[in-house]
Amino acid sequence: MFIEPKRGKISEAKSGWVELICGSMFSGKTEELIRRLNRAIIARQKVEIFKPAIDTRYDESDIVSHNQNAIRSTPVNSAAEILLYAGDCDVVGIDEAQFLDDGVVDAVNKLAAAGKRVIIAGLDMDSTGKPFGPMPALMAIAEYVTKVHAICVICGDIAHYSYRKVLSDNQVMLGEKESYEARCRKCFHLPKP
Ligand code: ZN
Image (cartoon, rainbow, N blue to C red):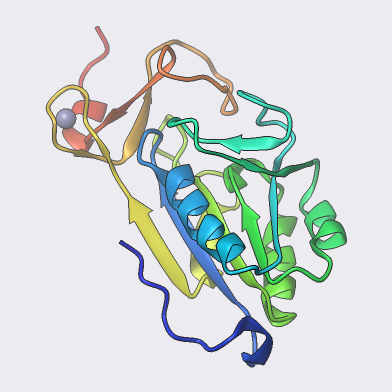
């Protein structure tokens, strides 16, 4: 589990910082994001949570993870909107960051420079195994990167690929258990039936 380093109170710290949680589908990324954000909320820190408007799988404004643990969030159409709405909060959470534009890198750097703790979650690879959107750049600029894993549905090994079970050329295809499954490196490359 990620243990926050001692950095003093956010307001007293010299600068903010960036945490990134990445992994495949079914790896618990959003649960980990919610765990960190909820603890900040309990400590009465001001928390704002954003997610791309494109991700409306469950609910328009809630970050909802697979275990129904929900937290209120603001849908945004661009990374610039995050800067606009982050205001005077202490902690900024961003879910499904792989769907945001490349401007999110600059936005996140600005938020951290303004003294905020920024916690990002997202898919690091698309269903073809390629790095997804701005995630590689976000991983590079983050102080702390946590890679979480799923379990391969074929063999039970550690999985870090999101295998798409249905044919589609669209990189952005939202869907749940019916469309994707977590697979390990070996099973991800098995010939298609
Ligand atoms: Zn496997």
